[in-house]
Image (cartoon, rainbow, N blue to C red; front, side, top):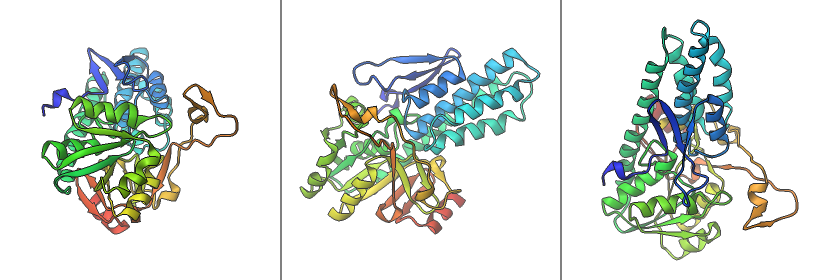
Length: 343
């Protein structure tokens, strides 16, 4: 498959950042131009762009946008004034560690710059973008090598090209597995309440003519009982030192079901998603959002209080394998994760 056929959610063209508005997919493919760092942060918060790697890449370009504005306004003091911008950008979403990783990487680099900071910062942001797509390709091959021929796969949320720099993490494995004739059928959880599986994953796979069947989240157990899948493959927004995994709400329950039914569970994420500063999943900050996302459904409003956590934490004991660009970790533990990060 030619990479150019993969939809790219993030573009830098003619000196401008634009994001594919994932809130309106698949009905409309609309790219929103962003000229100010606060617009970039708002786009991240409001789910114009989502998926941990894509959020990180967007944040890197957001630093470029901020530096251009600050340098044009005050070439002598731009580094001082950009600090508030970077802090604001860093707070856009708390759980996805890639955001802070990218902002910190750009921040460390800009401290040593002199003169116009835009060309070198843009080069670094584009490098982060290109490396993410290349890493996805590599992870796709590593993950596909673990899959038996004629397998069925279940995905949860969207961890495809739309959620990354291109190709995808979980869907990168699905793509590589399908094109190497390992995967026969993909099932996509709808993924309430934002329906990333229904609106994004199913649409994305259909663009590549990969056979995909949409299911309600609550149908996953019965699907496994019917022996129709051999692997659950998901991405991650943060993996901590002991191998616990934060991902879209519903991932934990899917992992529990997989363990009971003897279905293997794979997490695919770049090492920029791994946060070795947090020992276990209980300490991961979990984002909650407005309850109306849950209560307003098909033009019907449920009356009452709503709890709307965006992510949950899957314990490492339920994870069969973590696939990264640095290698594969089977049955993750603190020792194995430390060894991976040491390279």
